[in-house]
Image (cartoon, rainbow, N blue to C red; front, side, top):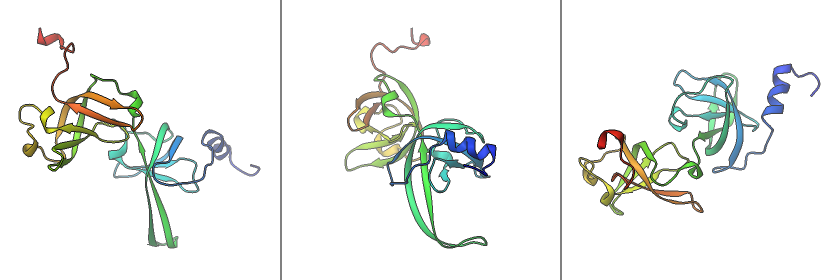
Amino acid sequence: QEGLSKRTSWRLEVIPRIRLIGKGQKVERGLVMDIMESGDAWVDAGFERWCILKRADMRKGRVKKGQILEDLEVHNVQERESRGREFFGTKTDVYVKWRYRVEQLKIGDEVTGTVTHVDGSIKGIWVDIGVMRDGMLLFGQTQGKFRGVDVKPGMEITCYVLDIKQETGKFALTMKRPIGTLRPDDK
């Protein structure tokens, strides 16, 4: 590592170099290198090139330049033709997610999320609560104005973790308050 600046050699020590395998690959840690105008971030996750962390794929809140992120996952790898000033040819864009792991959820946790998809064939609503994958809210577990057909992608909802399948990473949600989880103002 002779000839490298102190900053670069520090980055190489903190972020180990790894080979890109593909979608779903777990990455132990990444370093936020820059923030784009859109709020997306360039992250050095140890691959040949920096990754893109979309604002929607971040945990709640924003990241800062120089921040070290733990528990990343490769979300998508896209090849595209580039005709930019500095580079001609095929370019590979790597997208990562920085989310909580399903193992961090507990049954009965109150969570807030965004509806990503409504599936009438299985009578379910997919909700993004900031975990690596979306949770399933069955129509029968909804309450009030959230009755299947009235729910649209982009809506914010509050619900509770009903069930967790640790081996698959899947989890179910409910809008019905679990017994024993009364708020102080519910007395």
